[in-house]
Image 1 (cartoon, rainbow, N blue to C red):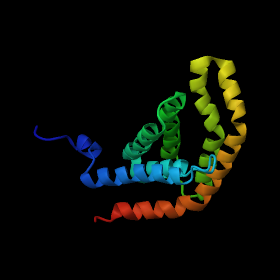
Image 2 (spheres, rainbow, N blue to C red):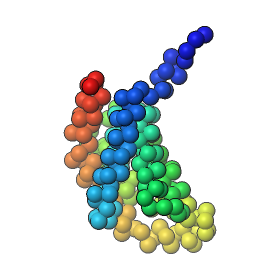
Image 3 (cartoon, rainbow, N blue to C red):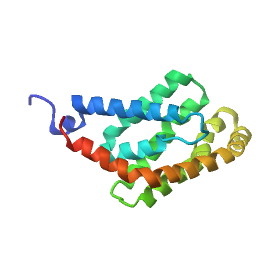
Length: 175
């Protein structure tokens, strides 16, 4: 048998996909940096939802390019470990709901993720320093999680549907 199998061919990125996903990962990082002065108001959650829905599993390339750029700019710490799995969890949630059209579904998923973000990250602090460390870290961040959840909810409610249409059109075009 010569050449890759059909299944391997589907997993392989075309040059166009590589460029598009690279741009999406970089755009996610640039958008987050542009809003960095506003605590926990970020477009990353929305972008992860869109990547999961519009690009399927290949969207993970863009998600982890974003994560790599975060590490490259901000350095390494305990939070890095959490970034390796929290964005994956949101991505998986979006893949499960990918056929849903209602902006409210996406807003609830994104808002819930924001509310639970500190708790998900606290797992790293539990592993590093025990329950007291994890709980104190999580509790001290509850106001930020409330803001994060509310902002995520509003951003997804307003922007998910129009941006999904734009990305789906971008995929259909063969430029």
